Image (cartoon, rainbow, N blue to C red; front, side, top):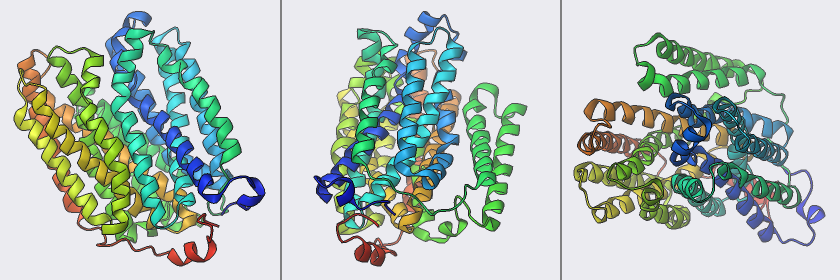
Length: 483
């Protein structure tokens, strides 16, 4: 798989050191992409005053990033397989850095929205290729541990994003949310070029019809979900977007079944590990992102500032940073199924607990335990489900599996936020702390139900991880790096 043996490229590095560089640099790239998905949320009021923007326009400073990120994930994976995963990862980071500079220099909200879309496109290249490079560098049992660390770092970014945005906006200026990406990104790009080895997927031509169909299908689905609450679920705009997304998705499946060189072979879904892993991930990411969206707002509804609210998520942050790496190691001992099922069940308990506690005058100390339970659960499940999906395919198809996994995971997040926002609006609102608490409680209750459904799906995973391609790994990778 790699173009040149590691000894020729890096004679001064051991194989173990080379893997550590892969883990460190791919985790950092994923951290940057995940952080910028939410970092602007607590700085929106400052941006609104600075750019004289209406609140409706500010919503798209978040949605523009999310839309381009979601719809281009599979494209990023396909480009990496064809032109080189390291090369396209560096290209994605360069696009992300350029988008960050454009965001920082934005003089109008329209400029900022366009620049955020560029950022999201760069992130769509970075995330699936980072996972693909990591999966290729760590075969067998080592992969689960590496994915646990990778998940912990990525999860940490999702949690600290709102707090970091609030701190920078209060202490410096909102533009520094984006300026800070530039020096970090440039250093990481240089290190990637010198420390990462190139790898490719199968030497096939780009599946252009498949790329167009899956991109447009994801765009229709995400657009409809994002706009549903604002425009109305029965509005022509939303119905047309969702119907178009569904029809294009059906067209994508039909095309991939007969394409000579498909970007996502449909036979992969015949694997119980692959299909159940993606379905479970979709279902437990929906309440995870929904809780992440609402919990900081619940704390702010009680009178806290954005930075203070973000800091009070530290119990959840700590579990993501600590439990995910440990969970990756436990996969090799117990298999993925119990870790995913128990982890998602713990998330259901934690979010349901929050729903029962929610009141306008709730003492923060009472939230700590359910946050730890929910955070520990999802931190246990994420590396296990990533490992089962990547281990269900041949090494040459890790890029395709990574792209599919990340797209469905993100679509689960969009679905979760859309569903919980609708539940919140019907049960409560923003008029008072009492109304917010009522809506928050109902939203968390629905999130708990989604988690229970995800735990049920997780029970369909194989009882033990079955490395169908272990022989390839063992015979062609004596030094621990796939051929």
